[in-house]
View 1 (spheres, rainbow, N blue to C red):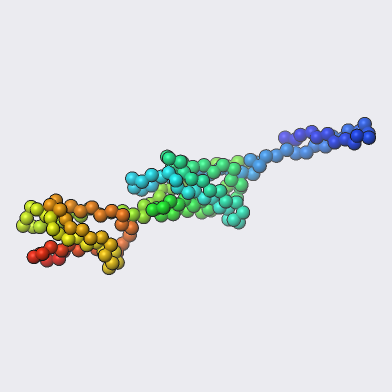
View 2: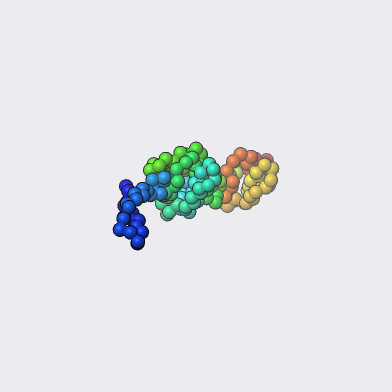
Length: 178
């Protein structure tokens, strides 16, 4: 689209017409949107979504809404890394996303919780009341949780960082350690 601009000198009757091309920055932009989900019962709201172009010249940051949705409108064209982060979850990165002029791109990751739990059921072989058993949970040899069972023998341990290296030791007077 061109727009006519009239330039003239007040001392003359000559009115030359100069055509100046009209353009919009939207012609140089694309959009990135999607919906973030999580692998546990947590909420996907408040996830920080950061899109950074490879030259570091353009950075866009938004937060997901209550349903985990986000939208980055008017992202200048180029190659981007889109990073999703939230406290308590692994960071997810989508690298090498090429945003083209007028393009629309969807990135909808599932974030993995850094924390989980254990449900332990333990009991005596010769009793129905399973109270008094001491359970110790270790991570790489370091005690991270200790409790004593109630009559059901069921223990729930939460807020453990997900990963290998855990061991559980049960101790009860008069019984071998399990």
